[in-house]
Length: 337
Image (cartoon, rainbow, N blue to C red):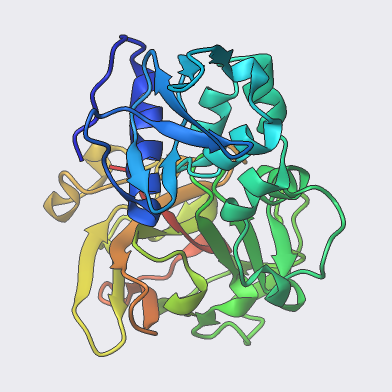
């Protein structure tokens, strides 16, 4: 759909254009004049200014930053005179929570309407009840709680969070939810707690030659039509043994194509300590919570089929003893390119 604008408000125009596009998918086609009109209190009206829109079955649905003009009475109506419920309905077509925040800056009326449950219900996952009990708090407050901090679920084995700007689902599988080879043998791995971890337990590597960690997650719990990436989340404290051979990270759908890559897992290693196999390899980054992370791979979740995503960390080639690695988990979250 071509959207025609009569002002130059940059980001605001882009946001409204997306809402128009989303609304048109639900309501119908574009009006002949490229303008929006709406039925407010059963009275037909057309929108002028920088309005743009589409034709809906019973009439037009309108929104924008201009003014409402009744074609019959020719009397002007500003957005301040629109019922808040109408503005809230308009905002409910916003593509992301970030778009709602942008539109709430238009006026006090928009800011007030942005508090309505109508707006935020779209960003709360419909399967939320499978993770949390029902809540009487406002949808905006609930969204803030789910996006500001991770919530521990599945008897402490996973964490769940909504990405604040998009509302997409994020999960972290704890070390306990992963399969760690030799993880049950105390001479190789220690299960301990760290105050900086979101989970009660993390896995601390004493010494192994065979490093192998794997995990899986069902794609039906993830947001559909979303590009995801898996990240290994860990720490390195007085680490050793990771300079002989790269660690192999892999991500893939069970029964499908698996992507693999070699990485340098120890960020403290200098180039002169490494052989040619490490040249140009990806290294971990420091997260805002103080842990290290490195991308394992990406995948597109269409949401059309129920698949099982498998993730693996492996270094079994060098036969060298490794230690000083602390595993918090593997995080699966939307990837922005």
